[in-house]
Image 1 (tube, helix red, strand yellow):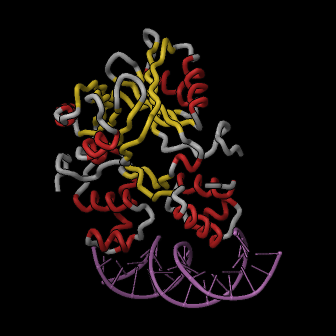
Image 2 (cartoon, helix red, strand yellow):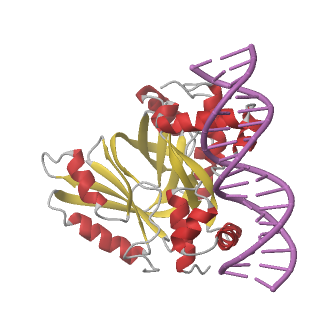
Image 3 (cartoon, each protein chain N blue to C red):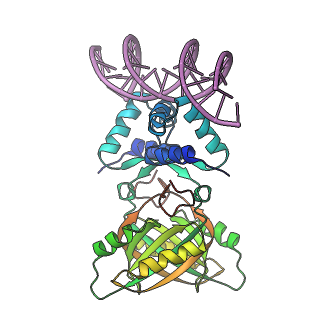
Amino acid sequence: MELDRLDRDIIGALVEDARATYAEIGQRVGLSASAVKRRVDRLRDRGAITGFTARVEPAALGWTTEAYVELFCAGKTSPPEIGVAVARHPEVVSACTITGEADALLHIRATDVRHVERVIERIAAEPFVVRTKSSIVLSRLIDTPLIVTHNESPFPP
Amino acid sequence: MELDRLDRDIIGALVEDARATYAEIGQRVGLSASAVKRRVDRLRDRGAITGFTARVEPAALGWTTEAYVELFCAGKTSPPEIGVAVARHPEVVSACTITGEADALLHIRATDVRHVERVIERIAAEPFVVRTKSSIVLSRLIDTPLIVTHNESPFPP
DNA sequence: CCTGAAATCAATCCATA
DNA sequence: TATGGATTGATTTCAGG
């Protein structure tokens, strides 16, 4: 997948404001509106852009508490097995397998600490889970969606 | 901040597709386009919706490697101090202070494992950092932006 | 909250480099 | 292969009820 400078600029504009008009984006990157639309369509077809979403303040929806949970799993539990299991818990907003002692790291959002506790209990009850180690988030310092361009990027400006 | 059922349905529609037209959203939630726009404007004014962004495949931009880094800090390091320090490293896409042994948990995105190593070295060189403990992500299982409504939500359907 | 009208935008086609 | 401009239908935006 090859993205040139214009593609990355367009992505940057859409990351900042996904509801910007094609004309606005075009003015910013130096392209006509139709050329921008063509490139956006192509970026979606190629999977570079997977969709457009609203950035929501979780607290506004009642999700005031978040936690990270390390999962220690039984002998040979496969990543997909962990994935399908944790996906059944809607409070799990992010999950991945990792190197180190733990097998997986989950990020969960809940309404309060009691809710966090219930979610951890439910997850710990999964047959392949040996034990869990949780950390509740005290304060969020940074929450950036993604860096599109910067100095160490593989596609420098 | 009070959000009624309509507000939450509108947010849900925008989280799924931030470029949906007001008419489409209105058809889905049972409102006219202009009524939807008025509510969206109000949701933005009140800070429930903080913006609209493109969902981007990090690998398409060259960010093929991610890692979680636990930070163990010196005696009385304040959360803001950690925040401003890690914010200087653009590879840190998320950071928070947490309960448990570690003081903070960072999520970093990098171009490759070598790049991860350099970032960790830079962060470990921050004066207040005593030691770090890193886990490289092997495979991502789940990456949901946020759950808008579900059974355990504080605003049940 | 809805309707309706004017301004703006999206989507497409075609000519061009 | 990619762009810019023009056209048409849809959408946004704001007035008034």
